[in-house]
Image (cartoon, rainbow, N blue to C red; front, side, top):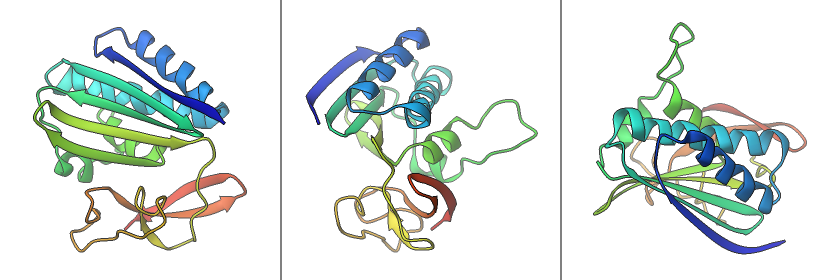
Amino acid sequence: MSEEFHRCCPISADLALVRELVDTCGRRVGLSGRRLADLVLAVNEAVTNVLDHGGAGGRLVVRGAGDAIDVEVLDTAGGLTRDHLAGATLDPTASHGFGLWLVQHLCDAICLEQTDAGSRLTLHMHRRPATVVPGRSACRICDMAGHNGAGADGPWCEYGFQVSVRALTSPGREERAADG
């Protein structure tokens, strides 16, 4: 088990620096292989979204504790909304525009908060994926905390976290089955 750590850097067009920071911190909590690559790609997409569609300014905060890591991507423009996340799709004919879809499908959990500083998108990963009962709709964060926070407001629980349905396809590997 690793000790707690906290790293912060401003969002800039130097995506190689962002990827290196996330890779280093991910390894520190024990991520490797596909799990690490998924986190690095998801953060790269979230930061690219800030640069291309947001205020082009913000902050990246990486926190690790034990076998989990949280990466906060703060967009000072504050324009990212739940509607953007809910409307994110994967168009196989498009050459771009699927970053938010990727972020939601690669991470164990995401959280979007509107703060005085802007829109804060938090990406969460554990060293190993959580085992989820096939077909059960559960909040991606609340269920990890030991309770099901499924709310009545579509794919968002009462805590503002995205709800998903996942199925365990083989030991240690999950695939997204459908949205809840």
